[in-house]
Image 1 (cartoon, rainbow, N blue to C red):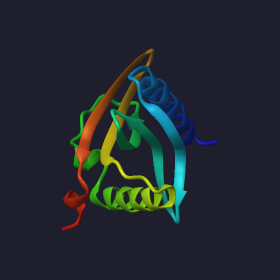
Image 2: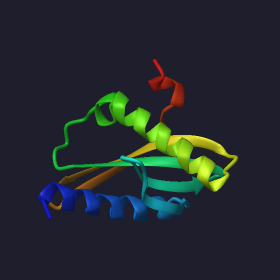
Image 3: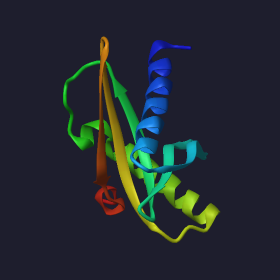
Image 4: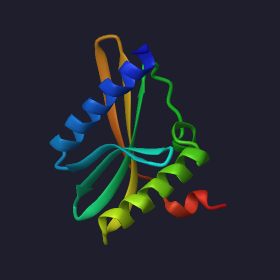
Length: 123
């Protein structure tokens, strides 16, 4: 397994633990639709959260569009739509990012709530 893949898997588990501590119910992890993937599907405050996890080893801050570009946003939206239809869900959908920076012994985890909307990527 490559170091970046291992870092990503470790980050996903950290994100799951972090979200559970914040009261999120994890519904699915690494849910796939065609070639698209949702890292984490969760419920919180009666909303469906579609969550992308990004784990980095550098503390360089990025904007939301740098973290999750337009193509990834469109893929997440398409996968979320498929998930909602498959599971007959009628809830408000929120797209979030869990951004993890691991530098040496330190880690910083940030939840970027409502990071983008489905109409942000439609242009």
